[in-house]
Length: 583
Ligand SMILES: [Zn+2]
Image (cartoon, rainbow, N blue to C red; front, side, top):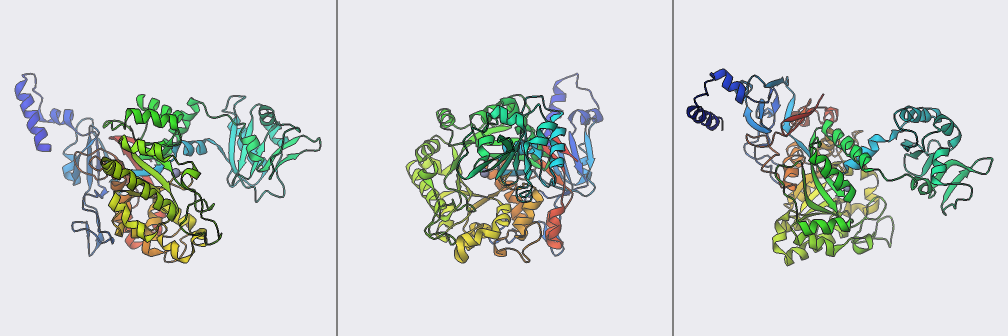
């Protein structure tokens, strides 16, 4: 690599008389863009651990535990030019090279979250945050603060005041309308069972004493008989529906806010799970303008049939240089476990006679998905229950039988949350990737066993069982429903404990993965899920310069103090050689 560059340089210089620069100038002209030095570099260049988690020969682990396998990374022209010792790396220094002494920070391949909703994440970040607010006055003060930067007449949205804690003293429109008269304001409660609006919002929505109240809902009234601005339960949509859909400009702001947050949190790529026509337009425009800070692997929504038909006609985009690649379809097969919508093979343990809902009854368009697979698309099917997963695998199997070339398209099941043991080997047989969320196991554990009972729970969130059955895994958080913080994800996957370190010893700890497996599931294996395992996922010369730097060493911490995985912080995020975040 280095040698061939030097050889090429010599040839070029030999051919042109003007080429008389000395060795130092030559280094300047051809020096690195960025050198990360004095770091604890884990390249992930060694082989995958075995299915039971045992390390592969060649992993940098000995009697002393884990140790980094390099000290420095050199970046040039968007690629990794060298990985090795600091001393060798500094030989790449030129006049324009930036050298960062990382003073023992940890460098890993760039993180990939393989199932996100960054538009929603951005929208959530833009709402006035009322989580933890204790008084009406404090909530109003936050809205007033926001109103200073929002043109009059535009909606102000907030979220998070606690309808449970406030139930004995619900707010009304009076003080809010007085403090913020010029903007329609809608403040959703923490769990969505209540909404609080000002008079301007009621006027814009056309809500008066004459407005019909849905059954199961309540529109509170004041002494004058008019709506007082508080909506409960099934009346909340009466006011929420009046909020206009975001303009293209607002959508672009949401996207940039969401991607910016992911960049700050160490991610170099997101797989965005389920995009409609308007969202795709915004993504494509930002990409054309060079404004995407990190890479986006787009999954178009099977529910947007016009968009689907247009893409099926055109075929998947495999654009190699792009920050945006669209070759995947997101399908929705069954509901969620918490609300008992996930489709089960047998009755819910806590609701006899009920097995959830799936397929056509859940709006799944099998024919359209088949057309997409025939046209070369990867499909990513949301499936939660054991029946939902079995039926999804059956459908994939049937379509692959019909179109054998579709077997190589790396189809995925999103969540793969509850599996019958008979279905686990089918992932490997069909080449289907299990796309899973370590945080979900930790957040669902308080009720998942009630839904499933003591037997089926053993096939739920079963990362180790899936690996042992030969399945390829990829990890993600399905944000913003769950926190995408990588340190939370690592801790969940490795310890099977929540943020409060509960339960002691871990929840079904036999399903935990090792640190080596978990980091791969967020890097190399996620790259595989996006057909990029030759371009990224390892720190090696010639690969994309997509790199994440953090202030803890997760390998060593896992062995000496796993609780402290939760305390990590991201220091740098580098995409295509560009530093997109630096603490
Ligand atoms: Zn999702």
